[in-house]
Every structure is written in C-alpha cells, then in structure tokens.
Image 1 (cartoon, rainbow, N blue to C red):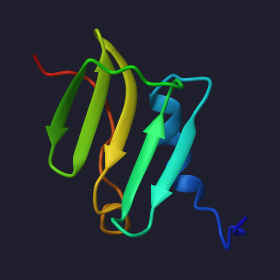
Image 2 (cartoon, rainbow, N blue to C red; image 1 turned 90 degrees about the vertical axis):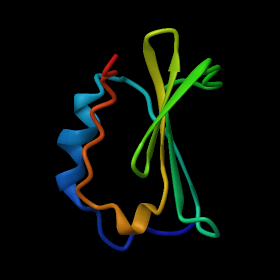
Image 3 (cartoon, rainbow, N blue to C red; image 1 turned 180 degrees about the vertical axis):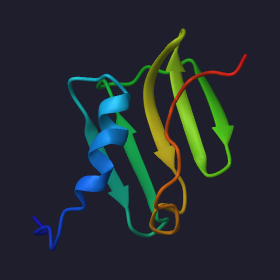
Length: 84
C-alpha cells in the first residue's frame, strides 16, 4: 500500500458537504480517474456529466462521483445537486 506523502485538509469541507457517513475511493492512475462511491455497490440508474465530473444517482440519491482528469481538477465544485 502506498503511503500518503501529505494530506491536504482543504478537501474535508467538500467531502462533508455530501452528507455521507461512508466513502470508498478508488484511483486509476492510467486514466487519471478518481472514483468516489457512497455505497457499495453503487447500483446507479442514472448519471449526469458536468465538465470533468460524472454524478451517479440511484433515483434522486447521489451514490457516487467520477472525476475525470483528477490531477488537473483541484478545487472543482463537487456539489452533486441535480439541476432538473
């Protein structure tokens, strides 16, 4: 397992905004894609792409976020609120 060189605590407010108790995070270095899941399995039935972010929903509940080009996306908003 890789060791964290340095943790950036500035991400904490963004994670807390999701209002989730559990997070599963996976990173694919080959594609620079970060996957954040709020339940396992996600069982999403809909996805909405906004820029480099893909929000995954089960009904109206946000169950995950995929961040494309993750290393180039610091400071992006991750609200997850649907704009329908």
